[in-house]
Length: 270
Ligand SMILES: NC(=O)c1ccc[n+]([C@@H]2O[C@H](COP(=O)([O-])OP(=O)(O)OC[C@H]3O[C@@H](n4cnc5c(N)ncnc54)[C@H](O)[C@@H]3O)[C@@H](O)[C@H]2O)c1
Figure (tube, rainbow, N blue to C red):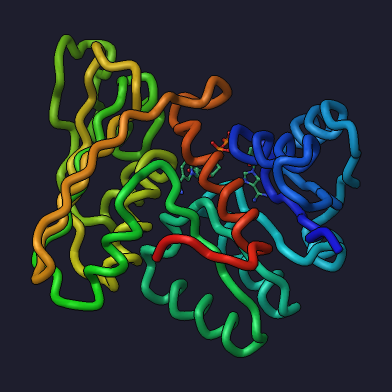
């Protein structure tokens, strides 16, 4: 029986997942979608061959085996509670929300209590497999340097609060430096990967640097991990999603790969 998927958030990532299901890249049925913006949900449904219903969150949960959150950090607590108390599987894209230790603990408790599962895709970064292995031992340092075109940072709370004039930049400029928890609050739509790293590293501090560079047209993530195992250094240069320059195309592909892996008999990688 194909997996029944419900999708919350029909934007850049949601639309790619829906398309992958519709074209058979994932052996699943997209049964229901919802979006804050009814026009966005309607446009997605119209673009698909096999049409899901547009429904409220509660009905979407009832119809689904697995619910994909591809909406926003703010949406995560309500979605997680609605899905997990029903014992349904949940995939979270707005991982920044889980940088809150209280919410992460609640999500873990709910999943255990209701015999459910929560999936957090690697998103737009590489190296999470090795980091998970390394975190079995001692980790001394995890750092993430994210470099984006200023257009991908526009509207972020930190940019507005600090009144940073992104249009005035002429070269690479350090915009932010802080912890993963600070980074996901400052840039909720940009550095979800900081929270993913933080969770994969078992709560080790992750130092995050955000650089804006008007001459770059990829979303670059550079990760360094040091510990008893040795040293990892990875660098990904992501093509931004044409629908949303803040989101990397690889993040959508990672969500698709994670959904496929839920049903795979053989799991490859850590
Ligand atoms: N984990 C990662 O590596 C990674 C990478 C990129 C983006 N993200 C995050 O994934 C999420 C989706 O990204 P995107 O690029 O598709 O964003 P997007 O802005 O293109 O789409 C989000 C959609 O969700 C809808 N939405 C927002 N809040 C909602 C709610 N409470 N209920 C229903 N619908 C709601 C919006 O109307 C919009 O259509 C964002 O939070 C983004 O920050 C994570």
